[in-house]
Amino acid sequence: MSYRPYQQIARRKSRQIRVGKVLVGGDAPITVQTMTNTPTEDAAATIAQIRRAEVAGVDIVRVSCPTPESTAALHEIVREVNVPIVADIHFHYRRAIEAAKAGAACLRINPGNIGSAERVKEVVKAARDHGCSIRIGVNGGSLEKHLLEKYGEPNPEALVESALWHAAHLQDNDFHEFKISVKASDVFLAVAAYQQLAEVCDHPLHIGITEAGGRRTGTVKSAIGLGSLLWAGIGDTLRVSLSAEPEEEVHVGWEMLKSLGIRHRGVKIISCPSCARQGFDVIRTVSTLEDRLAHIETPITLSIIGCVVNGPGEALMTDIGLTGGGAGRHMIYASGKTDHTIDEAAMIDHLVELVETRVAQIQAAEAAAKAAQPAAQAAE
Image 1: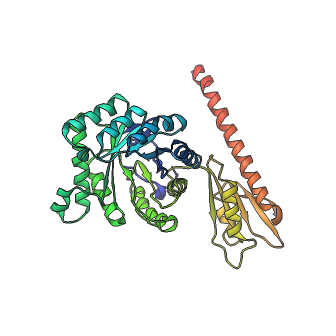
Image 2: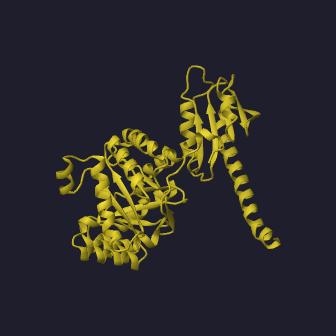
Image 3: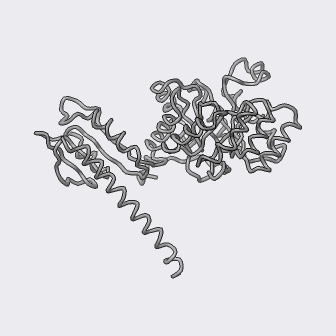
């Protein structure tokens, strides 16, 4: 959290639930989710995809479970990955029970679509017996018939009524370990629905703009919708829905949280768009550094500015900075102060080394502080 008042976000107060080892809601960090697109029955392919998402920093992964074969594969998938798995269930209540037994940390269902009250009770019992939470997943494209007849079209009121209707099925069974999403592909509809839902309940909210589009258009659309909600303090966990690989969704989700100062992970690069004043190829340099520094998890800031107009000012606010100079030599900043110059030919390798060295120092300091805690507590 920044110390500047204009950067403060007052987060909506929500109840806290658990998705496996991950806390959602309350004062827990906002989590980043994605969903696999491999056939879940192909456990090896699904595990490989989840592991790539883990490298990108995912907190929770959802997998689709439409068949007995897919829920059977969950046993191996859950065993081989390091993040909680949400089983995506539609209509077939037996798949939910099978997924809970297979080790899913959460079931994504709409209780009102599962069937009779007795079937809902069976699903709730399985969730309770196996320590599963539940996500109620309302979608503007699949609203219940009675709500479409009532409202004439998907609108915020219809999405909120659907969410609360489904929630009542769980509450009637004294089950409260659930979160809710009210997604829509229309940004205005989704944001309005989440705003209204946030006002009338304290359930944790999973936010997203569904079917947002491809990598570029979906990122922009999601940033507008999710950014609006996050800035207003709404959202306990999120997914960026892109027609792209799951790890790309994770990268975009993290960048949203980092941009708003909500969570920090890895290298945050502040770079100029470049112009005729640039002393080096800014675009190529930033692209290369993003790839070379993708393995870094410790939060650190790096400014890459092509000339001295904004370079020194941006460097004041970053851990490490680079400003373009003349004759192929550029200025390196450390903690906001000029430190030394570097030849362009060695610039990228040098910056990678500086970042890795700084990260090692940060990690060593954190480890020393952690090791000192038991001694300090014993002395009290």
